[in-house]
Length: 325
Ligand code: UDP
Image 1 (spheres, rainbow, N blue to C red):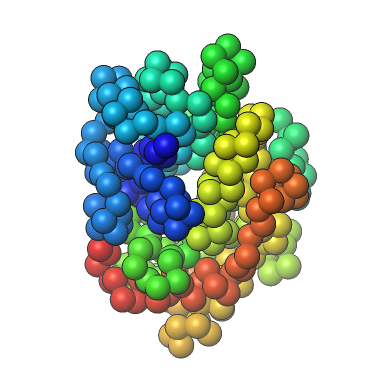
Image 2: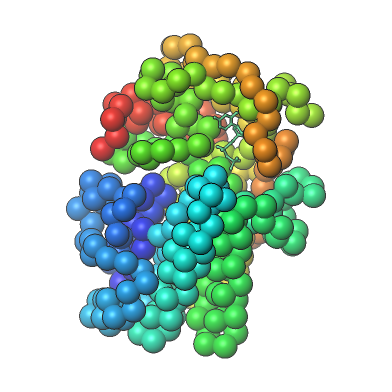
């Protein structure tokens, strides 16, 4: 039995491919390489193609005896999703429904979906539990929520069992620095802090210093990419024993502020982080962190690492791969 990983050449995908291999599973990756990097696969089996290609996916699933799919392939920029909404609906929702259609046709039984805490929007309370009704505040978040709904209905009508994993703020790199984060464009805090420290981009803009938090800057739940990868292995273990569909958070349950990220990076790197304070970014909530207890209860998963390991591995990766792979 093989696991098909879509988007396996991407950031979280490649760490997951590695963890799945270490768990003894046979893996095949389907990636268009539009944003992924073949180097990130460390030799894993790659088919270059589109998730929306029904014939390709059904053939691949049948030939390789695919029982489970882990689906990462998607666009992920909140800002771009607002300027090019149909690009996001088409790729993230249309692509996923075509993939799910092919999966069902080929007899795939299990599906793990890369969702996001963005589905909660500005949460009404923290820690965020899964029973909070999703209220997407961007097209990107809406596409994640729509695919969750598609999976719920296909579970009901076609028996495809799924686990939707709502990631909080993924960050960090592998501990041996073999793989890490390599975007041509990013708006996420940790890679921006690293690149600003290395002089590879202008100073970090700290968006808002008047939030009701301990130091006035935004607080988020940063989760190590290796912990996230292990969450996917646990999700497959869960589905492998026949358990029912599940949606759960993957976070640490602990928040760090922008200034805490900044000062820990200065300590770890031994360099100053060039930064300026600026206005709040539209749509940014003050505080978001997970209640991760459902994942612990149902999947037997909990984050092993904290902000220290995240920034240490991110710094080692970025300072040894200043131009990416
Ligand atoms: N942030 C910032 N400057 C940046 C990028 C992010 O101050 O250049 C802040 C942002 O306001 C938020 C936190 O860092 O409080 C995490 O932002 P990110 O975009 O990484 O993730 P989000 O939680 O918004 O999805």
